[in-house]
Image (tube, rainbow, N blue to C red; front, side, top):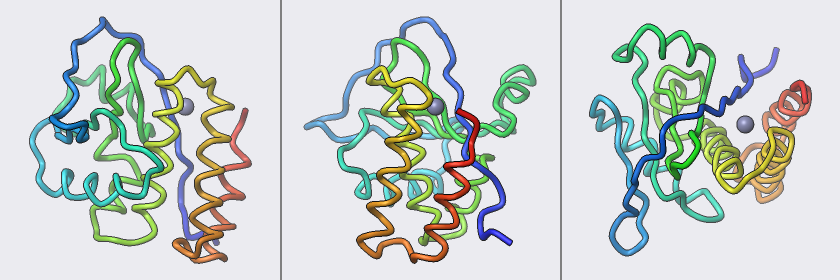
Length: 163
Ligand SMILES: [Zn+2]
């Protein structure tokens, strides 16, 4: 039995262009909708794990979104929209839910989700984003940040995704 129950899923939505101001001195803007300090804490743990920081991360609580959005986000861990540098994470996503329980391996799983979405923001296709995600995961395993057996099991799951 794999230690990880579900795979990371991703969606790209098209939305009207939004103006998003980068944070002061290049710091990542972190927020949740509605506000959730535990969510901010998770994101702040995850950011230093990334090779470079995203401009903005917003955690969406789908319990508080419209039914339409909730249905669209069913099973989605993270997403981006066109014309907006924000990486959106879903609080109800499997990875985020696990990370909310405290520091550990799920922080790394969430980090590669953010990295995947950042790849899309730079124009990557789904396959290209998955490769970037898998590459960063392997770095976590090789450097011992993620325990090798669990890490390789998860990589197996990542690689089984439909491309
Ligand atoms: Zn994707």
